Image (cartoon, rainbow, N blue to C red):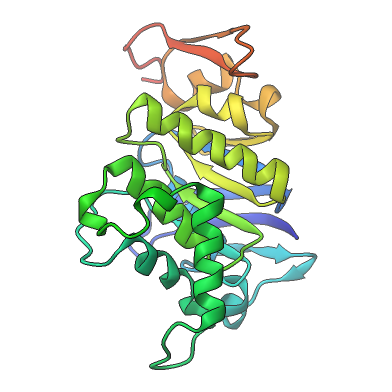
Length: 267
């Protein structure tokens, strides 16, 4: 599946334009990182890709066909959203929460079928959360809950995952677990990801493409090592940056991304 955005812009009803003339394309097996400061429009971009917000100008194409508002339900069978794990207060077991990923395939008042539970158990196995699948969601850690949310998305058997800052608020161990899982899904199952992230180092490690949203409204899109550069990060975040590749066999592609000062150079 190929996704393309042509001249995509989005303006809120009160008149603030947050995305301007975006042009990019990728395949559903790619890992695409989206980088930009807070307020740059990263989450709005994800919503537009998912059809939850409609582009003010421009269009989105799926396999060369323009996406229409009434096409969204079929789109959601191929693209699954993974929210940030901000709270886990659900009084459901992890397995019960994961099977909810199949709701786009259910009719009104329909309960999970045998096929739905088989898909849920497969997603649980892929993500490695069998040890706590029968725990209540409010009994597991934030990192475990983030992986469970990813399993819920996989339960609908998507071609592409869309994730909003999946590694935020997680410790090093859980961040690494999420990154390695996304890489494995892309390499072994050809399930790609579009990821909003505040971590350029993570983008350089697992993504093959990147979209950087600049402060002046311009963008840079392309191969991750050509786009996630010190110059572009400075234009995006407004402070000098240094990137130092690290030769770590266990973390291929990893680089240290260091901010060199807090002074905003765009002012």
